Image (cartoon, rainbow, N blue to C red; front, side, top):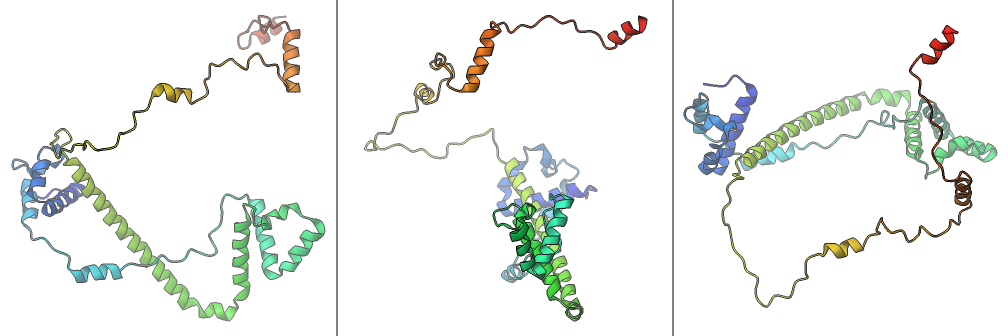
Length: 280
């Protein structure tokens, strides 16, 4: 009986492929897990599982691997006119764009304005400023726009269509890679679930030769505690403050007599003062 649930069907197919790769011993390990109950003979889905196990395994030839490697598609270039920092305020963005526009047309105009007026708002033109990259990106965009004429833009329609097609191909390629990655993750989960964590076997035994050099002793926790500054040390409490602000605070405390307690205040309920005034 074929399961109606699509996810369950994919899980059974994934399990079958994994068992075919790792042998029947792996199947015996999965019998103890309730999530793989379809392996048991009394399960309703065991017939579908057996059917998949009896199907011939399709092996991938060398030619198919070569085709798969040839199918690798290079990442297309980023969009030139839509890649910029969106966390900049609208006013700052207008200033950066306008400056980049004048700079791309004739940078001497902007340089004269800075040397004459010393405009502090144009500090983003310095290479050390955080917004300098945004400014240079807009300069490159405006230069590219100014360098193209109307006739050249008309001639580039075919190039634009080819770039769009290559970008769509890359997106489909990325989706296929994500699907393959998800399948690999599912296989890893099955392998992890098949490990008998409650059963341990003696794998090997080794001994240290007698002529081995003497190893260092274990770490002493008491010695490690002495390596840090103790919070309870009161050695510096008797030292008088040298800072003028600390002296002023200390003198004010002495004048108050060290009594930090204020007068007791009665906390009134919400609206109590207003009600008393209205009665008067």
